Length: 331
Image (cartoon, rainbow, N blue to C red; front, side, top):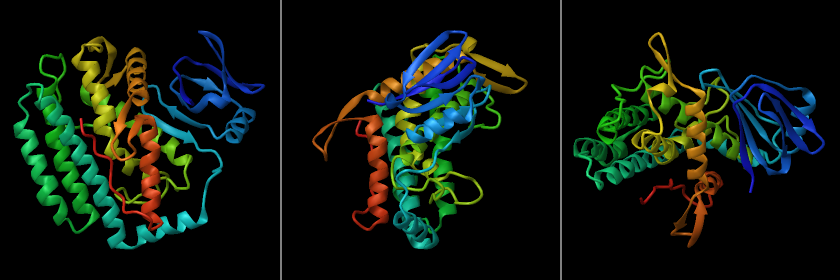
């Protein structure tokens, strides 16, 4: 099974025969390229064109993150699976307001359904979350179907997430952290720093999976296709952030695996330190490799496989084979 290589130490990244060679203060390590899905670079690394050509040949994406764990960009190699037909269908669905709205609504439906599943999970474990579950349920069942534009959908999702993020204080009651609203640039508290870091990882993970399909990541539906390079990964990530990124956050903070010492404060901004980032990606990878019984397929699948399957569903919708229904967790 292919894996993600996370590089935290600074050093040099190069090709050595058919391996990716990492020279750092931790020593020299070799990783067979055939075993790599993608590479996440957090440290300061030097690399050359020979390496990029090698990655392109082997369809490996390189994601770069800044000193504070913020997403910087990706080396998105020449596409091997691109399809003119699928790109045309993607563009048709974007340019037709009704078709675009239909897909965008599905992404928000999936996001809100999975948010509610997370809240009910903790509600069943004794957390008093009724004051958050009820308004989000009303938004999902009453307001969302009535939306007539993508802008209205975005507003509904934003309102739902306001309630959702406020519920973190109840779910994580007893932890040293609290959140007073979502703040991104910069994160105003440790929980916001964790949310931002986790979301960035999920966006990059889904971008990697899009690369392995016929889909073009530049054409999204909920997030407007404009001068921003990638948007489809942002759309699909809305569905998975609650059940992947946020569940990892609750585990790390709830079990006190992360503490105040894992965050760095710069003025009014908080950032996750390297130890925290290492813990986060380790917990996320364990989650992605865990399996569950898929009712429709009647077999166990991993969350990693699920990401790719979701994109195939989008592709089938665009080609008119099967209407897209977002994945909704049942636990």
